Length: 186
Image (cartoon, helix red, strand yellow):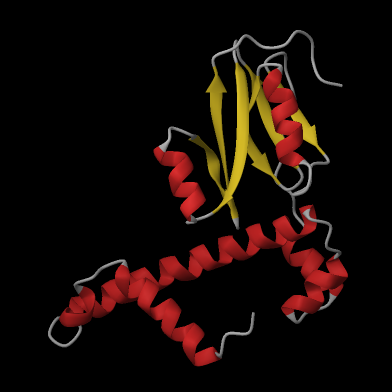
Protein backbone atom coordinates (compact mmCIF):
# COMPACT_ATOMS: atom_id res chain seq x y z
CA UNK A 1 0.00 0.00 0.00
CA UNK A 2 1.51 3.27 -1.10
CA UNK A 3 0.01 6.21 0.82
CA UNK A 4 1.39 9.61 -0.29
CA UNK A 5 3.54 11.34 2.36
CA UNK A 6 1.16 14.27 2.83
CA UNK A 7 -1.86 12.01 3.33
CA UNK A 8 0.14 9.82 5.71
CA UNK A 9 1.19 12.87 7.77
CA UNK A 10 -2.39 14.14 7.86
CA UNK A 11 -3.66 10.76 9.11
CA UNK A 12 -1.10 10.69 11.91
CA UNK A 13 -1.73 14.32 12.87
CA UNK A 14 -5.49 13.70 13.03
CA UNK A 15 -4.94 10.62 15.18
CA UNK A 16 -2.80 12.62 17.62
CA UNK A 17 -5.31 15.48 17.70
CA UNK A 18 -8.13 13.02 18.47
CA UNK A 19 -6.35 12.05 21.70
CA UNK A 20 -7.39 15.46 23.06
CA UNK A 21 -10.31 16.86 21.05
CA UNK A 22 -9.98 20.28 22.74
CA UNK A 23 -6.38 20.85 21.74
CA UNK A 24 -7.00 22.25 18.25
CA UNK A 25 -9.14 25.18 19.46
CA UNK A 26 -6.81 25.86 22.43
CA UNK A 27 -3.63 26.16 20.30
CA UNK A 28 -4.52 29.74 19.24
CA UNK A 29 -4.98 31.03 22.78
CA UNK A 30 -3.25 28.77 25.32
CA UNK A 31 0.56 28.39 25.33
CA UNK A 32 0.11 25.31 27.56
CA UNK A 33 -1.75 23.59 24.72
CA UNK A 34 1.47 23.58 22.66
CA UNK A 35 3.27 21.71 25.44
CA UNK A 36 0.38 19.27 25.72
CA UNK A 37 0.60 18.71 21.95
CA UNK A 38 4.33 18.02 22.31
CA UNK A 39 3.59 15.46 25.05
CA UNK A 40 0.93 13.75 22.91
CA UNK A 41 3.24 13.72 19.88
CA UNK A 42 6.06 12.23 21.95
CA UNK A 43 3.71 9.48 23.18
CA UNK A 44 2.75 8.78 19.55
CA UNK A 45 6.47 8.64 18.62
CA UNK A 46 7.20 6.16 21.42
CA UNK A 47 4.16 4.06 20.50
CA UNK A 48 5.17 4.08 16.82
CA UNK A 49 8.59 2.75 17.84
CA UNK A 50 6.97 -0.01 19.90
CA UNK A 51 4.66 -0.86 17.00
CA UNK A 52 7.64 -0.97 14.63
CA UNK A 53 9.52 -3.38 16.90
CA UNK A 54 6.41 -5.51 17.26
CA UNK A 55 5.72 -5.58 13.51
CA UNK A 56 9.34 -6.59 12.80
CA UNK A 57 9.00 -9.41 15.34
CA UNK A 58 5.74 -10.39 13.65
CA UNK A 59 7.49 -10.37 10.26
CA UNK A 60 10.21 -12.64 11.62
CA UNK A 61 7.60 -14.99 13.12
CA UNK A 62 5.88 -15.10 9.71
CA UNK A 63 9.18 -16.24 8.15
CA UNK A 64 10.69 -13.02 6.77
CA UNK A 65 14.49 -12.94 6.67
CA UNK A 66 16.59 -10.15 8.12
CA UNK A 67 17.57 -9.38 4.52
CA UNK A 68 13.91 -8.85 3.54
CA UNK A 69 13.16 -6.79 6.65
CA UNK A 70 16.23 -4.61 6.17
CA UNK A 71 15.38 -4.06 2.51
CA UNK A 72 11.77 -3.12 3.34
CA UNK A 73 12.97 -0.63 5.98
CA UNK A 74 15.75 0.85 3.83
CA UNK A 75 18.65 -0.57 5.83
CA UNK A 76 21.07 -3.45 5.62
CA UNK A 77 20.36 -6.94 6.93
CA UNK A 78 22.96 -6.38 9.64
CA UNK A 79 21.45 -3.04 10.71
CA UNK A 80 17.95 -4.56 10.92
CA UNK A 81 19.20 -7.51 12.96
CA UNK A 82 21.20 -5.28 15.32
CA UNK A 83 18.30 -2.90 15.83
CA UNK A 84 15.48 -5.43 16.17
CA UNK A 85 17.10 -8.81 16.83
CA UNK A 86 16.89 -8.85 20.62
CA UNK A 87 14.29 -11.34 21.79
CA UNK A 88 12.58 -10.95 25.16
CA UNK A 89 13.69 -13.27 27.93
CA UNK A 90 11.49 -16.31 28.30
CA UNK A 91 10.84 -17.50 31.87
CA UNK A 92 11.71 -21.15 32.57
CA UNK A 93 8.77 -23.59 32.56
CA UNK A 94 7.40 -25.11 35.76
CA UNK A 95 4.62 -27.61 36.48
CA UNK A 96 1.93 -24.99 35.86
CA UNK A 97 3.53 -23.20 32.88
CA UNK A 98 4.97 -24.22 29.51
CA UNK A 99 6.63 -22.41 26.66
CA UNK A 100 5.26 -23.24 23.23
CA UNK A 101 8.14 -22.28 20.94
CA UNK A 102 8.63 -22.26 17.19
CA UNK A 103 5.15 -20.85 16.66
CA UNK A 104 4.44 -18.78 13.58
CA UNK A 105 1.53 -16.64 12.46
CA UNK A 106 0.42 -19.69 10.45
CA UNK A 107 0.33 -22.35 13.18
CA UNK A 108 0.04 -20.64 16.56
CA UNK A 109 -3.74 -20.57 16.95
CA UNK A 110 -4.05 -24.23 15.97
CA UNK A 111 -1.35 -25.13 18.51
CA UNK A 112 -2.91 -22.98 21.24
CA UNK A 113 -6.26 -24.69 20.68
CA UNK A 114 -4.69 -28.15 20.83
CA UNK A 115 -3.12 -27.19 24.16
CA UNK A 116 -6.37 -25.48 25.19
CA UNK A 117 -8.26 -28.77 24.86
CA UNK A 118 -5.85 -30.16 27.45
CA UNK A 119 -6.54 -27.29 29.88
CA UNK A 120 -3.73 -24.89 28.97
CA UNK A 121 -4.32 -21.22 28.09
CA UNK A 122 -1.99 -18.49 26.87
CA UNK A 123 -0.94 -15.90 29.44
CA UNK A 124 1.80 -14.11 27.47
CA UNK A 125 3.54 -14.23 24.12
CA UNK A 126 6.32 -12.87 22.00
CA UNK A 127 8.12 -13.60 18.76
CA UNK A 128 7.54 -17.28 17.98
CA UNK A 129 6.37 -18.32 21.47
CA UNK A 130 3.40 -18.35 23.84
CA UNK A 131 3.55 -19.02 27.56
CA UNK A 132 0.64 -21.24 28.59
CA UNK A 133 -0.72 -21.92 32.05
CA UNK A 134 -2.50 -25.06 33.29
CA UNK A 135 -6.13 -24.82 34.42
CA UNK A 136 -9.04 -27.09 35.25
CA UNK A 137 -11.06 -26.33 32.12
CA UNK A 138 -10.63 -26.35 28.35
CA UNK A 139 -9.83 -23.11 26.50
CA UNK A 140 -10.17 -21.76 23.00
CA UNK A 141 -7.95 -19.05 21.51
CA UNK A 142 -8.37 -16.55 18.68
CA UNK A 143 -6.34 -13.81 17.08
CA UNK A 144 -7.65 -10.58 15.54
CA UNK A 145 -6.22 -7.46 13.99
CA UNK A 146 -5.92 -4.59 16.48
CA UNK A 147 -8.89 -2.24 16.29
CA UNK A 148 -10.81 -4.44 13.85
CA UNK A 149 -14.53 -5.08 14.01
CA UNK A 150 -13.73 -8.74 14.73
CA UNK A 151 -11.61 -7.79 17.75
CA UNK A 152 -14.37 -5.56 19.13
CA UNK A 153 -17.01 -8.24 18.49
CA UNK A 154 -14.98 -10.92 20.28
CA UNK A 155 -14.36 -8.67 23.30
CA UNK A 156 -18.05 -7.71 23.45
CA UNK A 157 -18.87 -11.45 23.56
CA UNK A 158 -16.66 -11.99 26.61
CA UNK A 159 -13.39 -13.04 25.02
CA UNK A 160 -10.49 -12.05 27.29
CA UNK A 161 -7.44 -10.26 25.92
CA UNK A 162 -4.11 -11.97 26.52
CA UNK A 163 -1.24 -9.68 27.54
CA UNK A 164 -0.52 -6.61 25.49
CA UNK A 165 -0.90 -6.42 21.76
CA UNK A 166 1.72 -7.66 19.31
CA UNK A 167 1.24 -5.47 16.29
CA UNK A 168 -0.77 -6.09 14.20
CA UNK A 169 -2.47 -8.71 16.41
CA UNK A 170 -4.29 -9.04 19.67
CA UNK A 171 -4.80 -12.49 21.15
CA UNK A 172 -7.94 -13.54 22.97
CA UNK A 173 -9.06 -16.59 24.93
CA UNK A 174 -12.23 -17.98 26.43
CA UNK A 175 -12.80 -20.92 28.76
CA UNK A 176 -14.98 -23.79 27.59
CA UNK A 177 -17.13 -25.42 30.25
CA UNK A 178 -15.53 -28.84 29.78
CA UNK A 179 -12.90 -30.67 31.80
CA UNK A 180 -9.50 -30.82 30.10
CA UNK A 181 -8.64 -33.80 27.96
CA UNK A 182 -6.23 -36.09 29.82
CA UNK A 183 -2.49 -35.92 29.23
CA UNK A 184 -0.44 -33.31 27.51
CA UNK A 185 -0.19 -32.64 23.77
CA UNK A 186 2.95 -33.93 22.13
